[in-house]
Image (cartoon, rainbow, N blue to C red; front, side, top):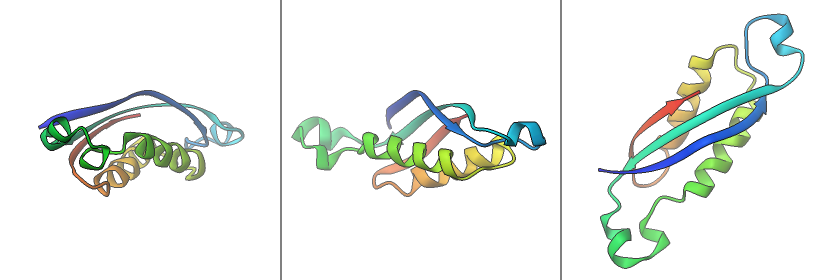
Length: 96
């Protein structure tokens, strides 16, 4: 299984259970590992045979900036689900 890394993606969003945490956006650091079989992309050199990790990063950023979750765990679960909807992604590891 091949791995695609999205590392040190910094977004600004509302997260936390305390009132002071929810007053203004704070920096959220996100790291993701996408697991997929990418041997066909390596042979064909065709981006359509790979994972569009730029698109994944944009979706992750947009979601984290807008969802306003109370817990990091809920945000991580959201992001994992979003990543698993991407074609060819079979497994994901999310760190928030």
